[in-house]
Image 1 (tube, rainbow, N blue to C red):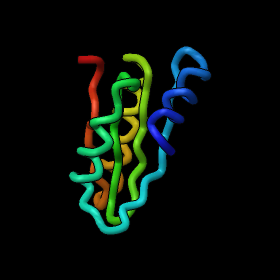
Image 2: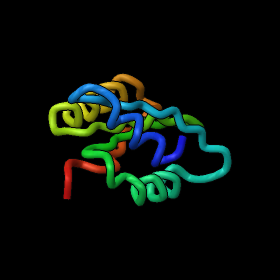
Image 3: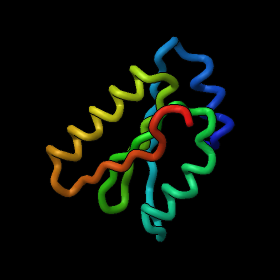
Image 4: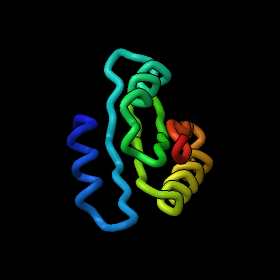
Length: 94
């Protein structure tokens, strides 16, 4: 999914939308993938990822309350699954 498609999708949802995108890592390191993703997240209020091995879930929110919920949920997921890691890609508006 492209950033422009996700931006449009989020704008069509209710006041507190959250989108979760499934991401595979074929041959790149997560830090490189997340660095690339961060460059295109101007439309999102918050973005956080939970990742392990070859798979990640990236959650995007459009406001503070949704951002806090996604951060808390993925933090809890990473805590319960020792192989998983959480990374905050964007926290609130700059």
